[in-house]
Amino acid sequence: MDAGNTAYVLGCAAMVMLMTPGLAFFYGGMVQAKSVLNMMMMSLVSLGVIGLIWVVFGFSLAFGDSHAGLIGGFEFVGLTQTGAMVNGVPVQAFAMFQLMFAVITGALVSGAIADRARFWPWTLFVAAWTVVVYIPLAHWIFAFDDAVSPNGGWLANTLGALDFAGGTAVEINSGASALALALVLGRRRGWPEPTRPHNLPAVLLGAGLLWFGWFGFNAGSALAAGATAANAFVTTMTAAAASVMAWLVLEHRLDGRPTSLGGASAAIAGLVGITPACGYVDTWGALVIGVLAGLICQLAIRLKYRLGYDDSLDVVAIHGIGGVIGMLALGFFATTSVNADGADGLLYGGGVSQLGKQALAVVVAMVWAFALSAVLAWVIRKTIGFRAHADDESAGIDEAEHAESAYEFTTMRTSGRSPGLTGQQRPARPHAREEESR
Image (cartoon, rainbow, N blue to C red):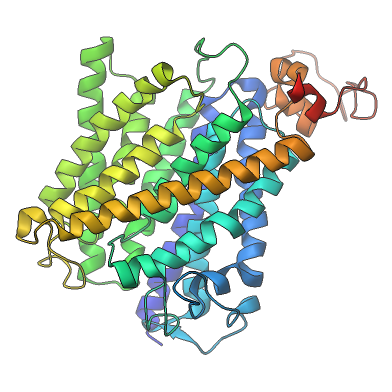
């Protein structure tokens, strides 16, 4: 065991865990005040339900010995293997690091259905989605031969696609899954009439926490405190900074003002774009990726109104499109001078071969995530109902789903619980499926 690398991976795992509360603030600030708790709870419950799945059998299926490159085995069920190592790091530490990737990916998807999703159907969806969608895709791209197990997934080992920290399994996966959910649940009532973010300081706080955690996300993927991790840290910062400046300049040009919401979104777009590339490109490649992410992701947000899909918090445009930018950019900017385990892209004498591999990985991730997420969401909607009742959507999901409100605006003071209606006292409403069928 390498004590230094183990401490490094554990610290990075804790940083990535902080990204999920950061995402809760980021998403929570962007929704209406009457549904902020529901939005944040969808991130919180992802920590709970995905955490249990991962410890019991999820990590084993993702990183156990591969069956035909498609899925792992059951060697690590329960994570009781205290003696196994990965690059001098105990498997248990590596498993917790990878758990935080799974959690943040599931939580990201929730942004597409803000202001209109019921809590328990979402919990069921994210549990099933983790098993059916995320775990196989993570096995394909993150499980390398002779790392955790002798045989790994086909995208990384047979195809040879590069993805340092999750452009496919995290970013494209969450974007494609979000699009499927948005289409299955349908538009919010009143959309495309704009709804203002209710708390922009919370959005900026969330973006800051995400930016901080992203250093653990990207640099931690080196699994060692060394040169590769240092390069990933530098390229992560470079791309995010370039994205912020490119986004704000374009926003000012198109709308006449640079906004705080735009700046926060820009930082996330740049971080998404560099995620798959951070360990394989140099600073100049990172700068280009950041600029492209800041410009293209902003234009993609504007495009959703023409295409007519209601992705509430722009998961598709920022994470889906940003992930595609980063994956394809590797085909141009990857260089073995940064990482000998990678490849040379087109601009570094490598030809078009790597670009083709990256493009195939993008298509596979998009089709897999979209198709299976759509099926899961449709089944849940048709059985137990997924979308909130029309009255609850108008009045606010927080009270209906959680019997709470984020803010008390009354000047009256009371002791104990509010005398408002309890769940048992509310008038009966049609089953969610009946409401959706109307």
